[in-house]
Length: 557
Image (cartoon, rainbow, N blue to C red; front, side, top):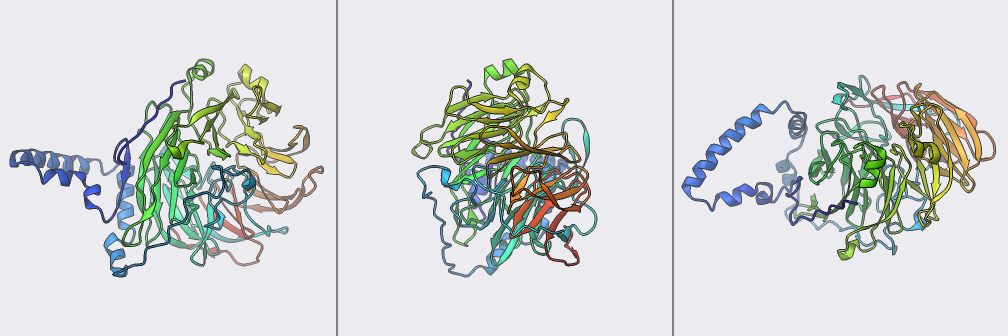
């Protein structure tokens, strides 16, 4: 296997970009060099800078440049914030960076909120490092009502090119789960959308809490809120960058970004679909550049009380090896799922179906992670790995190539990573090409629930793999099933969101309600205190609740 390790002494290297308001020399390192140069050299540099300015003006139509300009014009300035800062501000409390568990991800936290519990909420895709937490009730058992639509009129749309040509993308898509959390007496809702924006709303009213932060292209994945209490949201965009964005002022501000081109070798493209994990000041993320990354964030606060990061890329490795490329016959090996961690092993899969586990046990002591698990599903595996309390892996895979391996292995499988032959059981979904599973499975009691490209929703016995029940919705169903309070919440491509009583896992689901939203529902709903929040491909994001109220007209972006 080809292993690439990149270590950098300063975050400006290898595609990093940081912004620290009070450190002008680190924002403009060329300035510190200029003051030491002679007049001849300065003249040459002056000519270079003039040419550079002309070049910059010529590329202002670039989406990333437009996004930067939009963010600069959307509200506060650093100076405005400084005026409101007390002369001698108290140093903000530093959240603990030490996990109480001996593991990176304690098995005791499977199915529970994101530790350490500093921020109450649903903070990342599927809620926690094992991707097994779906939110809190009470979930409506009667028809929920639309509390608000955002925006009140129109849609969150943008033009993007996925390789098949530029087209309009609207709303939110796969995976697109909002983050919802408590902060300063409000319930916040934060999500990325196809209008290039990261949005900050009041979950109760749908009104904007902060201006939209614009990236340079669409956002497909799910954001992650810092679990240790730092006011930071982490998100990727198709514009090439994974970002850390602060929300501790009157407008969001970019703290740092990592380019998909920062490491090598890379394959496929520059998108970032995965929802990062943050544990003990380390960020774990896979990219569609086909690399897995670990970043030491070095979070803190400056003298003005503003949150800061000083990131260092400490590890990266390809999602592929030579054996995979030979057998799969394609360079489409991107990581589109969200990494999962159990005990001291991080798991992820790629678009060629290679599932890997890497041992993190020596990371904080400076030891490089080592590959501890390898399994090939045979086909594109975009669904995130789900891990139960005993360390078994539940993996959904697509059926697009129709090759011998994927026909043999199946599309829904339970793996024991401690065994040489890890397949505990598997189930097929091979009714045509494409078939299989895009959504991430949900664990509920003694069952695992998943949906298929053909619109089927299926529950299997977790121990045996035997089918418990099956039902049909309007496909394709790519949304990841959500279960809270024994209620299955699942959307379809006809624009309907459904609620089913599945308390009795041996009986067919009992239909409770259906809400017509419109637009294919690819995004996974977030459920918090009984509120249901999700976007669809019709261009909007919705807040639903059990209360009978007239929908509020949420502020447009």
